[in-house]
Length: 303
Image (cartoon, rainbow, N blue to C red):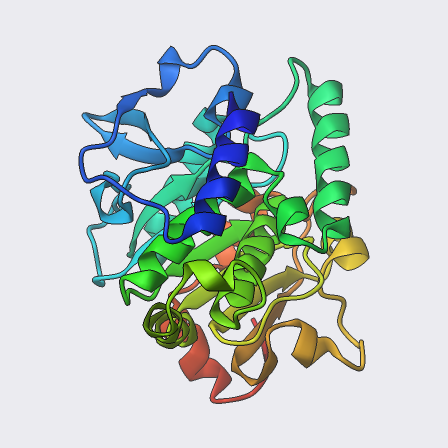
């Protein structure tokens, strides 16, 4: 089901701005038998529970998770999870980030493929390698979560609305690849004939005003344009191996250019820990504007 959705979204993006609806279909998270069937669906909060919303939803129509202490700013963030994370765990991660930031959050689900821990890790790891090796729009969009995020991103940008994206682990790689698809369209390097000059100019302005945050990301590069904050736990081995490694000569360029800030901290409670979002990254997470103010224009910040 998710693979068919991805193929449909690829065709839609090639043909022009994907259509969205403010009356999307939704269902309780408990109604999904296999987590991979939720791949690429929105994750929202409604009636005290978690709800899944179809990928053709207008982003503003997805019911948001709100901070436990109340909303402290007017921002809404779209968050993509890492591998081996079912919808229930994804919802806990979304709530943790909302509580830490004071912002509204919704999720876009990166489905868990497998019925047990080992199978999920193996299949998830295989998808990470495929996504890291991707170089063309068809390769980027073969992942249903990337296809859904790219469609949402293009729809929002084409309407002149900047987006605020966040991703943990593999979710950061999905965010990176979706941004690359949008950048190819904006630059006229893919599906250019389907988008007018006025559409691409409007998308470019919104792209430049967008915000992106990553936590323990396994993406090693991001396109210039948005303003970035990348959280890196020095004791997170996965990010050290696959993500933005400190000390690289071209680190600033790969992180998104002059508008990128890399935030470093060191925390690990277990020998092989350091990567989990709720245990390590959410406690370090701060509102975007606070991080940028503390960095004061510098490319790095130590917590």
